[in-house]
Structures are given as C-alpha cells and as structure tokens.
Image (cartoon, rainbow, N blue to C red; front, side, top):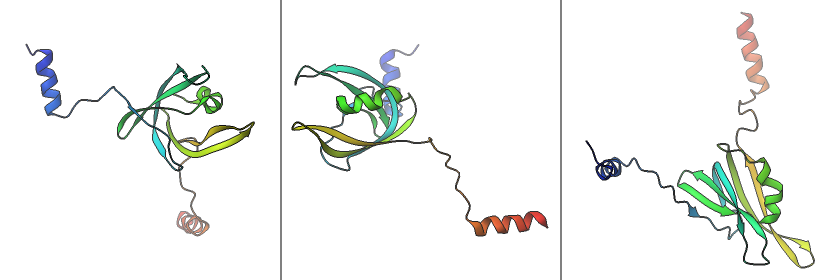
Length: 134
C-alpha cells in the first residue's frame, strides 16, 4: 500500500499539485488587473481606524490570489459576487470623496454576463438568407 508521502512525491513528479496558499495581490498602479473565478471573501479587522474590510480570494491562471478592495468597494460589490463566476478587476486609482478622504476605484466586469455569440453583420445575414431560399 502506498504511503501518503509516496503519493505526494508521485503527484509532485507528475506536477499534479495545486497550492491552496494564495499569493497576495497589491493594487499599486492604474491598470493593475486580475482575471479569475471568485472563490470567497472574509472580513479582516483593519489596523487604521479599526474598520473591517473584506479580503477576497480568486482562482487565476497563476493560482490562488488574495486581495482587498477597500471598505467602499466592499459595500458595492461583495454581495453580488458569485462563487465560480469569472471576473475582470482593474484598479483605476484613487478617487477624492470629500473631506480630504480617498477611496480606491475599480472597474469590475463579469464574464458571461452577456451573450458572447457574435452578431453577424448585415452582409452575412443577406448571404445566409439567399442560401436558405435556394
């Protein structure tokens, strides 16, 4: 009977291992982006002002990634993210909200939210109709 260690070594050799430890992604510059499937989020206690914020985990082409968006974005987006759905998140810098305060700004898109079937141009439609009528 194979031991756990032997199974691990076999999986390692076959490159059949997946890390469950996410890498931390820091939003430092405009245009910084993540594309991946939403896995989960959990509240984290902040060190500045004692406010809590969410830390998100996404499964990307490079493995698991964790990051925070900030409490302002959490209020808008956390409730509508669905596990397994693919999202594109792009950092768009900071936005002034008054009183000398700033919030992180993100563009978040859900893949599959629209029908990806290309709309044929009119010329193609006319050609298809002509073929159907013959």
